[in-house]
Amino acid sequence: MSNEIILEARNLKKTFGPTLALDNVSFTLRRGDVRGLIGENGSGKSTLTSILCGVLKADSGQISYKGKTFNPHSIVDAQNHGITMILQEAGTIADISVAQNIFLGSERDFCKLGFMNQEAMFKAADDLLDELGLTHIRGRDNISIHSFEERKLVEIVRAIRKKPEILVVDETTTALSHDGRNLLYQLIEDMSNQDKSVIFISHDLDEVLDKCTVLSVLRDGQEVGELGKHEMVPSVVRNMMVGREISDKYYREDYDRSCQEEVALSFEQVSMGRIKDFNLEVHKGEIVGIGGLSGDGMHEIGKLAFGIQTSESGKVTCGGREIQSPKEAIELGLGYISKDRDREALILNGSIQDNIVMPSLSSIVKGTFVNPLKEKKMASEMIEQLSIKCRNQNQDVRELSGGNKQKVSFGKWIAKGSDVIVMDCPTRGVDIGVKQAMYELITEMKKEGKAILFISEELTELIGMCDRIQIMKDFKVSKEFQRHPELRDRDIIEYMI
Image (cartoon, rainbow, N blue to C red; front, side, top):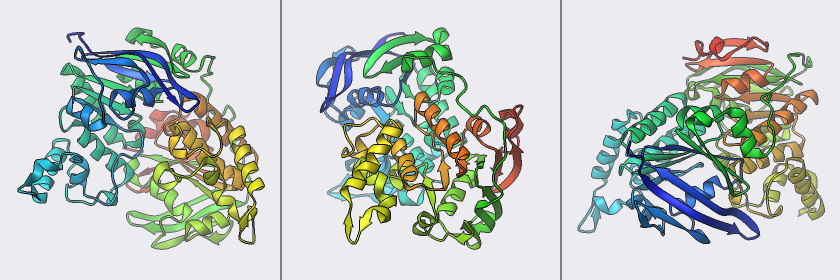
């Protein structure tokens, strides 16, 4: 590797109203680097990379790229110069084709005499997809028929199609299945071996330590320090991130599997698509985990529980009453935290207050009028209880960091007083400090007698949090594990793959 500096930022500053997002941050990227960028939610990671990729403009500071001053005026401009980014949240446009999403901004490449050759675009998209082994996704497909994970794979294809010099990966792996992650890891390794560079943002510390060659840490919009490969000690990194000691004990320390006799959520011989005759009971005061590979049906179980998808046979009941729609689920005291929070859990253009109070409107409405005092009080209590970082409760949710968005997702069901909560990847895209707080909150919910269906792709958190775990393989339960201090990842993996 040449060790040549390919990109350098000096004293970048960025404010959003009264919020100082970046405070004179400097950043150096060398050829061949896989540079981890880590910090708590709101530390400035996405702001920094958005400036480097032309999404945002810095208020002050300088950027040089390949030895020349660089001020990209748009994300397309940055892409044309060889810098591209895979966004943290959904980056595809609904209801257009996969090919249109891949070639977004480059449609003219397929135009002749004012007419677009769609067949040529579809063929070019298929060729790119085939190169990565994504033969189950086709260029002519409407993007909306594909899952969240598949749409993220399309974003990866779009990002690398011009063979960038620098690839920014912003919390992408949390949205991918096991196979999708391995595909991305291989792309990152290939870029590094080709003397190209990667900026890798992740809240998964093990992943960062494994994949990155150098690490930059941000805290409260400031650069805290840089660590080489041999300096990346987990306890040191955590302390740099949050400015305090973070215990290794994130999860429950008890091994008490006791729960109430009453069944809160039940699946009885439920079949839908490839899921056949699925049975499960979740009792009050119990945390039941569902794990496996992302494409093996576990996320569909969550959607069935909340009535987003309905069964072809069998039934899902909450408190003994059948659920057939999200409206019925909410009325029966069931809440749902979706993996795809931007599309299924939150109204991004709505305020924090609107999102929090929405499931509870019936309790604060008198006649046709919403009681503004109750509305404000409910939102304020959740902001304080969950330490949501925001200007005020009227701030739009789309402006929040990933972790604070997830806190709003939690907050609306806590405010509602839901007795049963389905959590699908509830800690996706949140930092160490927020994860620890969420695990404490979930543990407290169990103690209060709430029933929790905990769906996750992370075996460590399933083992750490659940009273029992059902592992799915090929759309059916392959094994159930009980909470035990000796249970390890290796005991489970063989039943997943």
